[in-house]
Length: 296
Image 1 (cartoon, rainbow, N blue to C red):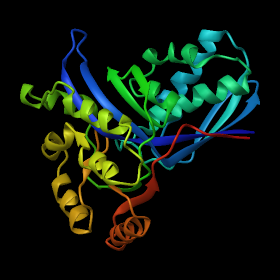
Image 2 (cartoon, rainbow, N blue to C red):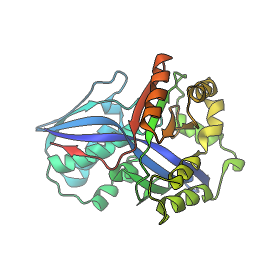
Image 3 (cartoon, helix red, strand yellow):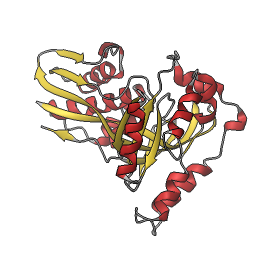
């Protein structure tokens, strides 16, 4: 059996530069994978069989099914596979679980079926799946531009612990589209926040343990931090609870509603996580990671 881990992500920066002629938005973002992972288990079969252990997740209606069918169609491969998904990434959280699973499908089936497709070949399939899938084919730390299809790997972020809070706020249909629609011209930027973050990350003096690492954390930015408070009922209250629990700064994960904070010290991160757990919040303690890993 082949196992591929599909990591969640957080946006270290997320800027919207404006609307595009195709109706989408131009973004500029630094994205980081974290060690909160779904596990996808593959074994050869005559047919395609998809299953998942998470209530409410229907593989046939997800990017997982689309990625499987697309790879078969693009390669003419007639092999099948039994694919079992063990979910740890919360559904519809802004942490990119569905897109990461789709990238894991491409990686896993490419290996299981011995297709030998290069990364550039896999990336050619991504526009027919979704904007975040391209990033997850790389993993680690990367600059993402356009609709999300242009990915430039970056030096690793200095290691940080990540504490996540999943607020029990009402589910919003077509969440990402609604958040983009709520943006006004005043929310658009020119990419300067991301440029500054990339400059700090790639600076020669950055060793990962000094003040430069803290400067990076202080430059975390998400354009949806502000508008999300009006979009998710009660989100502001949970953000305040997160801060009261000891987080120095709290940001929305992608399009939310998950919230996160970055912590340098492990003991401090563990204490914050315990505090949230004691209050009964759905929370997670993890850390920043590199690329998708495969395990036989």
